[in-house]
Image (cartoon, rainbow, N blue to C red; front, side):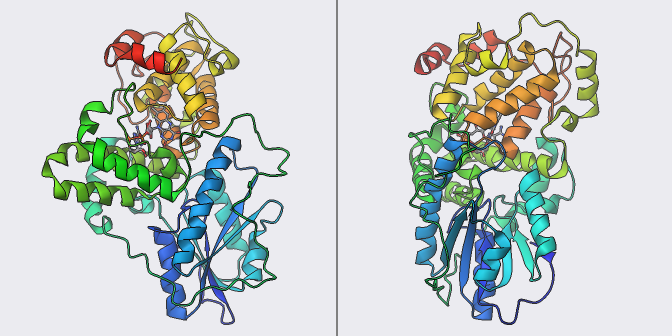
Length: 448
Ligand SMILES: Cc1cc2nc3c(=O)[nH]c(=O)nc-3n(C[C@H](O)[C@H](O)[C@H](O)COP(=O)(O)OP(=O)(O)OC[C@H]3O[C@@H](n4cnc5c(N)ncnc54)[C@H](O)[C@@H]3O)c2cc1C
């Protein structure tokens, strides 16, 4: 927990406010639970506040639609715990005004390592005159406990492993002892309505994806399906893009609709019932914990997480040496966006991203590396990859995206490989070997 503004709760305060930003869920949420404990101690009610802002960086209609669906579950789940919920959207989302309107005694928030949300929290902590604490609710091991940037999965893994037993513990999900009553005069927007209505500048060109419904309830359902029917084959099927053999929980994790701890606990419970799942569970938890928290660590401790400067010195050197290498062919951003390259596998991956709002991990690696081959320089590759990733993927705009793109294009978390044109020492993936590892024809047909 971080104390962002010290002091004692306002004596005449009428409620404890949880300013919900990233952890958009009403259960299994350590930030919310801290708010409830404090409120119960002070015999005050808890009200959760969510600000619907219209200019979240790189967000478009697809993302807002998913978020909107999630807010309905938040309201329902909070009501069961005796906790109030108020969403105020642009133009009504003045945070300080809300804290004043409900008579906040203190504010609890969650954490997000991304640049903009961190700036908002810093600004608010300067302006608040009541205590403000934040709780790292969307990772298993609180990110600041590692203290510094970690260079690779092999360096973060043992550190996380040592700390995990303290944090892989069931949630308490306490109820509020004093229920929050909304006064008639207190303004709240309706989460049942379209949160984006009237927002003139919002990019509405990317349509919602019907295949994935947002929210904690859909996420829990997906988790159950994965654990009950798919976990056993995860080790075998996770690298087969033509089979949906992975959990597809990344978008729910991104929006905080589900917590990584909830997932880890469900996986461990399944192993307890059936020890033969241990191998698959370990492979899964390594992605969910080691790789995911490595990306969070990267964004938290590296200001340049979305540019080439986030790379290691060996990678910067090799990229510089190959900056002027001639590309066999180049494509414009428009050609890439429309999936109009000579490479049918790449086009299919791009189409999967545009149509489904999701892309298989194996192809995300190939997809980003190919852009490096086809753009005039690595700087442009990074811009194009981030633009497309964040625009179309429901799980885009996430530390995993910046970490994954930096891995593919700038060798982040990787080692130097054999020298070759354009890539230098950055790991290469060829179409022939990638296509041989799974049924690429079937994948192309599925995404035609
Ligand atoms: C170029 C590139 C771009 C990417 N962009 C994103 C992005 O925008 N958002 C995003 O969430 N992930 C991104 N990833 C990481 C990974 O591809 C996705 O998290 C994963 O494919 C999501 O599918 P899943 O939930 O079925 O994964 P599963 O295989 O079921 O894994 C479970 C969870 O583990 C985490 N995870 C899995 N693989 C990785 C990985 N390689 N790095 C970090 N965490 C991982 C995710 O949170 C995932 O939901 C990117 C990877 C690359 C190489």
